[in-house]
Amino acid sequence: MYNLSTSTDVTFFFSLSMEQATEKKKSSPPAEDSAKLRNLKRYARTCGMHLKYVDIFADCKSMSQKERMLDKLIRDRTGLEGKKIISIAQSFFFCQRSEQRLYMLSGDN
Image (cartoon, rainbow, N blue to C red; front, top):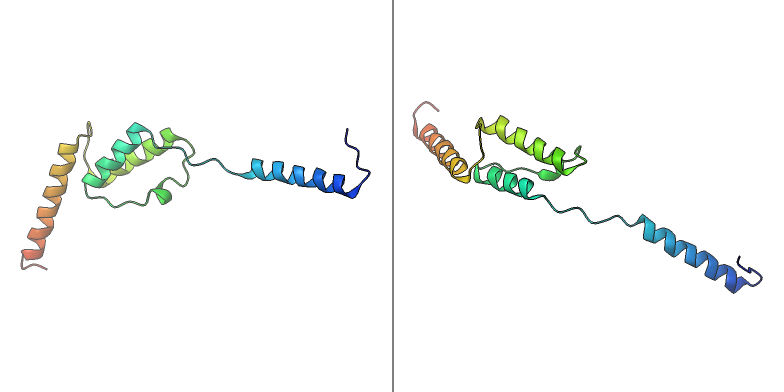
């Protein structure tokens, strides 16, 4: 095995094991978003939703869980159903914006 008769050998032995230990502790970089998740994020942004994805995906461990979570959140907040198309998101955003403007201009508030 190892001959630990001198102090330099001991230092080398321990420094080598520390380097190996730090290599194992380094975490891998976060995985890239899937194409579906990128499209859902784009769709949410087009609808006018400002989201903190770190908070939303805190409990999600897999990419499919993130996709389902964001899809459910979009459906709950917008009320839109069916296939997600950017043109539908744009029309939703403009309708919502025009309603806000009308509310601000009305004398009720």
